[in-house]
Image (cartoon, rainbow, N blue to C red):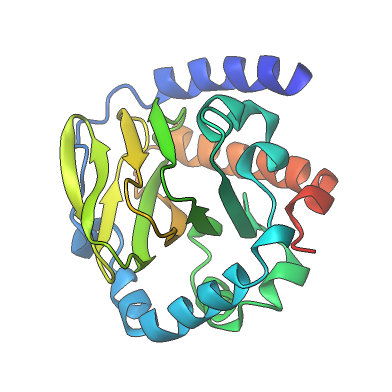
Length: 227
């Protein structure tokens, strides 16, 4: 309950602070996250790491087991959405990073990535429409495993294809949803990337968000560990 109250107040204040930003829902990676090119080069290794993790899927926590505030989108339909958090609000989950050296190496070289996770969607899993609270971060999505190409995700009412190696960078505060209609799991790399800004107040807000979230992540790290 306390987590929900604090996050609700924080969402309201953050939305007010970034209200003046006028960028489209889906953003150009070369402009806003040029480091994505390096991730594409790491794709085979990232895919291998993710598949190795999935082999022990029973030990991977569901998203709502990591954060109770995500229950509405994670525990909505009886299908699993599991997450291997490697970095959370700037805090490295060392035991998980040890299992993912390719991703951990990229994170060490790119501190503007505040959160990083391998995401595992069950067949039939639907993540209902939702939006994030904070325009200070951008969401990067790299599809690593999708034997059945098809609908990927919908951002601000527009559907984007789902295929291995496909990547997308979007503003998480726009409404988005995900559906895996196939008979196989879908595996992706998700990153939260610091939005480039010039206003001091926005930079300070980002630092405050990361510090607060990082402290919470340290206190709850046990939930994120893969067993």
